[in-house]
Image 1 (cartoon, rainbow, N blue to C red):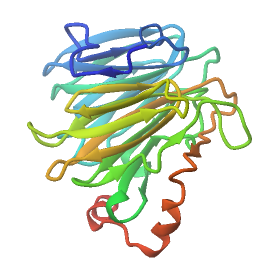
Image 2 (tube, rainbow, N blue to C red):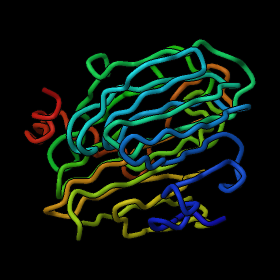
Image 3 (cartoon, rainbow, N blue to C red):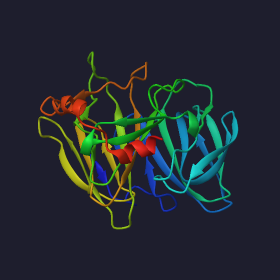
Amino acid sequence: MKLFHPAGAVGDGTDPVRVSPAMASWHHAGLAIVSLDRGETRSFDFAHEEVAILPLEGSCRVEGGGLDVDLAGRASVFDGVPDLAYLPMGSSVSLSSDTGGRFAMATAVADEERPAFVVRSGDVEIEVRGAGQATRVVNGVLSADVVGPQRLIVVEVLTPAGNWSSYPPHKHDEWSEAEVPIEEIYYFEINGAEGFGFHRTYTLDGEIDETVTVRNGDVFLVPRGYHGPCVAAPGYDMYYLNVMAGPDPERRWLICNDPAHAWVVDGWAGELPDPRAMERKR
């Protein structure tokens, strides 16, 4: 199973990213990054998937699945938090944009039809995690705390230049009191044309151990194992969209940190968060 996909490698010629469960060789999570020209309208069908639509660049209108709504966007993923629309399985959706731009469609295979809803940017919980050089910002656009979806979980993570995130390394690939199996997609954007960062995913048995250089538009698939850190090179802020889904009927986000590195969390109690992250929360 190929885990790392450089920018464009999983596109379809029209859109830069198209990840389906079949392509990923798993069961639940999917992601498309859809590009629209100014004034363009496109249609999509989600017969067996629930979907969350959120603007990465630009604003859009969503019609279908019980919604007829404008979603406020942003100039880039580094400029604020967008609105999000959730639509149930069986939806036929029309997506249009007066501004043009790029829009994420995060999906999870579903077998229950849930009511459509909108999460406005002002209602998104913004969390600062970690401390010092492990400080990052998490936009809980469709976190496990947002009630409604059957399986789909979507969050955004912004890592200030030079910082580490997804740290300590953690996993969610088995059933236990502290963990549930969840497939996860990382979609990266880097603030700067020459910018880059790093990402690691590994298993203790060594079957998976990949540390890759990530650049704007890259995708990494996490079927199992510990993932982290993600490291933003000095001078270049890092963004990633996490799309998660699994079989848990309660749609919980339960994780286990790698015990070899879990101790670092204790040190955060005496260390201040990076002020750049605190500014984003305001």
